[in-house]
Each structure stands twice: as C-alpha cells, then as structure tokens.
View 1 (spheres, each protein chain N blue to C red):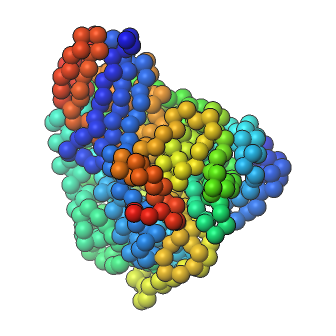
View 2: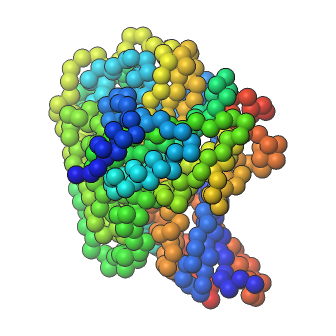
View 3: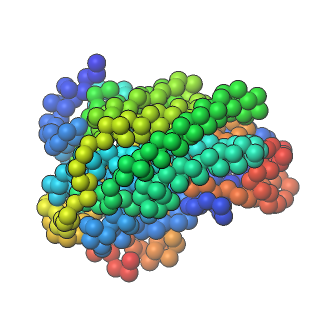
Length: 144
Length: 389
C-alpha cells in the first residue's frame, strides 16, 4: 500500500473522471507537491507535461500528468504561470524524466524552468523560427 | 583539449523516418555520456490540429506515425468522443481492438527484425519481414489499407468486419503464432544474439520510473504497467489482456518481452473475433462539434503509453491538442542507459528502445587528438568494425 490517499487529501485532489484526479497548486508550491507525491508513492512516473495558452486570462497553464502504477490513478497537477513572465522552478532534479517536457514547453511556449541546465531553444524547432523569436504554440504567434 | 572522443551518431537515416542524433562521448571504447540532439523534423502537428476541424484531425494525428497509426487515431478519437458525449457501439470497439492488436504484432516484429539487422543477422531480418507482410495483409483486408488503417471515425468505425474476413484472419493467425514462437526461440537460444544483447543497457526499476520510460522498456525492468489493463479502453475491459513483465532490464529482456506480447496479441485477436458482439458498428451520422472541457486520453501503443491532452472551448475546432508519443520519453530521456557501455553497443541499446526515429545510417568519427574525421556506415559501427581508440 502507498500513502497516495493521504497525499491526495492533503493537496485537495478533485476527481474529474475514471482514473483521473486534479490538483491545483500555486507555482511556488509545485516543487513541494511533486516532492510530496514522489515520497508518497514510489511507483509513480511523470507521464507528460502539457502547456496550454490562455491569452484572455493572461496565463499559460501547465498540466503535469503523473501515473501511479500501483494505485492505477492519473494525477494531474495544474499550475498557472503569467504570460508576461512565464517562469517556474524546474522539477528535473526530483524527476529527471521531466527534462523532455520542460524543453518542449520552453521551445514552443517560452516557459522558463529555473534551474534546468539543459534548457535551450531549438530543441524541436528549426533555426529560422528560433531566430525570429516565435513561440509557435502561443495563441498570438504570427508567421506559423 | 577534452580527453574524450565525440562521435555523432546520426542524424540521417534514409530507410526509416524521423531523424535524431546521439552525440556519444567516448573514453576509448567506453561511453562516458550521450547527448540526444533532436529538432531535425518538427512538423508542427499540434498547431495544425488547432487549425483544422475535429473530424479532419483524425487523419492528421493518425499520420504522426506510419507504424502505429491506429493507436494515434484511437487516442484522439476516444478523447474526442468523451468530449462530445458519444459512445461507440460495442462491435466497433472490438473491430478497433483487432486492428490495434494486429498493429502491435507487426510493430513488434519490425523492431525485432531491425535488431537482427543491427547485429548483422540479415537473414533473420528478411525472414521476420516476410512473415510480417502476412500481418500487413490482414490489416489490409480488414481496413482496406495496408499501412494506414484509418478505420476510426467519431462514434464507430468506417466498415464492418465480414465473417469471411474474420475466418481468414484466424487462419493466418495460426501461421503467425507458429512463426512468433519460432522467432522467440531463436532470440532465446541463439548464441550470437544472446552475446550481443544480454546484460547490455541494463535499466533498473527505479531508473525506468524516474526517467519516465514507458511501455516494453518499463515492463522489461519489472514494472507491471500496461494502459490496456490499468486504464482500459475500447474492448480491453472485456478481453482482459495479461501483462507481460520481465525483470532483467537488459536489451535481451526488452526484445523477448516483445515476442511474448505479440503472442498475447494473437490470443486477444482470437478472443475478440470469438466474442464479437452483433450490431452495426458504422454510425449513420458524425457529430462535428464538441462542448467545453478537457481530457487526458491514454492508449497502450506498441512502444508504450501514448497520451493526448485535448482541450475544447466548444465549437468545430479543438483549442489545444498535446501529443506525447512513447518514443519522446523513451529516446530523449534514456541517455543515462548508454553510460559505461561500449560504442558498438550504442545501436543495440537504441534499437532495443524501439525508436520511432531510427536515424543512424552514417556516423562521423572525430578523433580530437589527431584531428581525423571520417564517415563510417552505421552497420559497420554496430558490428564493431570501427575502433576508436
């Protein structure tokens, strides 16, 4: 048995469907939540992190999707970062598997993950898009 | 000057799609570190998905991969069906499952064939590819197309499975099952294959979870995680697949696990045909607009967990679709698995992750001390014919 149920009640998880739970945290609490989650359940992995741009609310929403192998639950941690200063702490030192997701969100949305040393543009994008300073998956991106 | 020699493996491979480069740092023959360099082929599929309608996107997303296209269509379609409140008929779910399991068999056969080729066993490559063609033919008689199934539509499938087609599928499966057992035996018993794969690229359970590795790579390291069982979709809640797990965590375990999974797929297809519900799987009308909401849709692709994040703000187009393919985790996050191995094992380890990229036809060997540069073929490297010392 894991300590996942107590983690979920501690962070106010809300069930949104079969095998899916959502936790909303402030961006400076993300690292605490991830550390707590990893220590509560050792059979957990970060499946993906999906960024969504909401210009009318002025935020980029980051959805960290974790899968618990033993409890068979998908735990989605939602964090919002401001669009004009999209900065958040990295979690790659806790879970190195977050590296590709952080690199992708940096390249396509311009989110800066503080402390991630391998952060660079052009991880996925061709040089002409990088040089033009375009973040193509932002809703107001021009020329893509 | 650095003490190590840097060997860029890649990025172009004309035989397969999606280029990638492994920048391998060597101390003599031993790998000290690997940088995985991507970005050669970003196609902007997610942006394209936002600009097209819900229905058109089925065909856009199923074209992400030529090998596992039906699972992409499944992940997308089941997510959209959830947002639209559509439930496909049970018979459609069974037909989708049969197509996806056929895809798993031919995908696992393909990567085992590529592995045989990478270690210089070209005859075995030819034999497996010959038998794989029979599976491709089954896909063609069911869906109408040999490579791209395109059988998924919102709320069902495009065409029904006729009884005579199902009989043919069962007949060919008998042949395929015997061949799969034979190849599994070859991989288990052949001296050369064991010598090249055993104890190479070992990954522990904790490492696999920490680095977010998925699918056969995760299961070969002793983690019983399979979306078909844990988070069932389509007809899997009724068919009840068995999870194949191995505990060795090396390249051989990953390849043998795939043979066992292909055999399990044969069993699933037989069970699906036997228990196929009656009814019409083809919907009369297709819904074209979704309500507000978001969904994380997961499917067990041949290479592992495939996950889509679909966001809808209502209307005829999606707001955002995030696609995370299994190779994006398995290849980009697996640099640690090469450290301490030999240069000739790099292609073996990469192939054992079943890369949906396959990149490495030619290799530029750079000797920094002597300032030498020469192009060598990937095959020569994998056979250990190139010495960098």
